[in-house]
Image 1 (tube, rainbow, N blue to C red):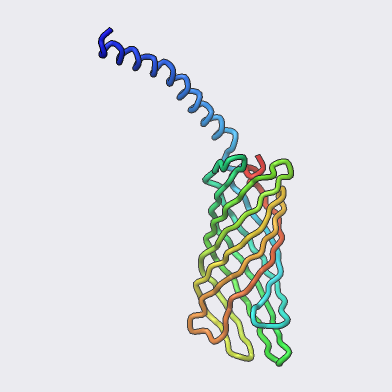
Image 2 (cartoon, rainbow, N blue to C red):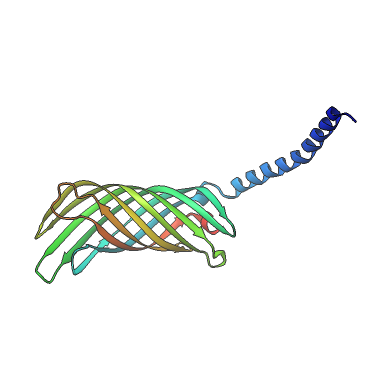
Length: 204
């Protein structure tokens, strides 16, 4: 048998073997896409939390974040599943701070940020999904203290880390706001608990 004939036979065998495999792969992909539709990947997160101003011995406040996001990417990491989400968050808030030296501060803020989060599911039976992410965007601040004021539009970013169990989630975030020409630092911490509607892909 010549080398040409051997090559032709091997090519036919390769096509004969690989075609069904590719067919099954495409079929599995289509079934996966049908199984997890848009509303399995889309989620709306409503929360309420505690706001804290750094630099004060006593501080209290409230933040009310609202987030809409979508999960465009799934990752298989050994026995664990990873998910990447991208979205948008609106977060108004009010914080107060005071110190023993008589310093006092009050700040109202609202932020409009683009968000990205990475979820890691490793306890599927408990539906426990830790996550970490960041938000980047515009912070509108109106604040005043005994040291000065911070009024205007500022760029800021907010790393966060938390955990989701079922639809319930909790996280800690630090909003780092570039003060610009403000005489006081408008950055703040938030500790948030909330509920997520949708996003069932994280549980399946």
